[in-house]
Image 1 (cartoon, rainbow over the protein chains, first blue to last red):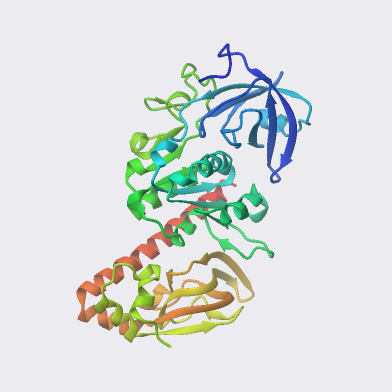
Image 2 (tube, helix red, strand yellow):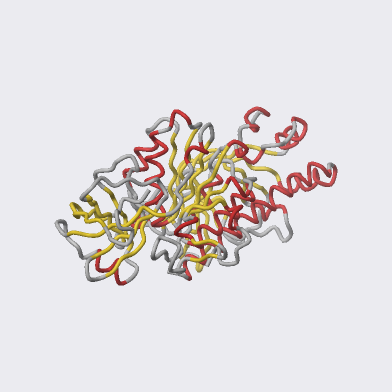
Length: 274
Length: 151
């Protein structure tokens, strides 16, 4: 359900904190004027007055309605401007939009989450949601890859998950530095180290398109069925309402029908990995 | 030092082997231990053993020159490596170095090839697993390359 009374008009939110996650990634802590609800995996349109708006999936817990955290990678005009913002300014929020993760379908299962780069932002929100229902899950395994140790975001998250019952978290980097003594290699190499009952499991993939492609292929090789794999697609969502067509992927509007799809739903689409 | 059948069953690579097949591995393998910075083998070395990482940590990479090592990745427990020992010309395509105290299972590659000839089912199963290892390594390398190209 939308939090905005007028679907085109953003609600106001005060930026209360900006957290540096890496050289290119910051987390913005926002306090909306009214309580803001969303389902994990849904996205919002976040705007800067006079500059523009861009789509983001919140990285905070869907159980918290008083504040919202959005993790933003500096990639273009709007995000570059956002990175210059200081606490105290007001921003606009529209949404939430689309279809998030169907966490109720994960009950009684093992959940494997494969993430890369800034894809950890939506995953963090999912992890908060899964922690809340952990009594109804068998286990949750996170495999995350970043380009370098410095590019890894939410570093304390990994220790916290590894000390949480039913959760385990693994990290790797494409390129190590002198201080790094963990795994080296792309995110999919972490799948060599996990033990999971694939038949009773679902897999979630979220990250850059290249990682999504190689990740989905590896999961299929491991024995996952098409409908056991959930992909969080990023396709330049703009209006959020299935009107403007910017995010069309075949017969789907990613903003309305997604952004979370099963691989089964979109595997025949030639634009899936573009 | 040898592993038992039950110990082998707990190692990722040996999933789906029956007791008779595990006995073959036990008969042609031994445990080797390495210290930090020990080189298991260099790129272009002639190889005689196929290894499975039992415990510890190993880095794998290529060399541009003798002093210039490029680390491409790490190996995980239960993973097979040094697969070139099974295929002609039996020359390694990468170096492998221990980065912490490490134990590996060293399987005599010549004896393994002889077992493949004697026991086709065992040979097919093992070769399929080795092919999968190589396929994953190739796929991961492509992924790594794409990451570099899109930096």
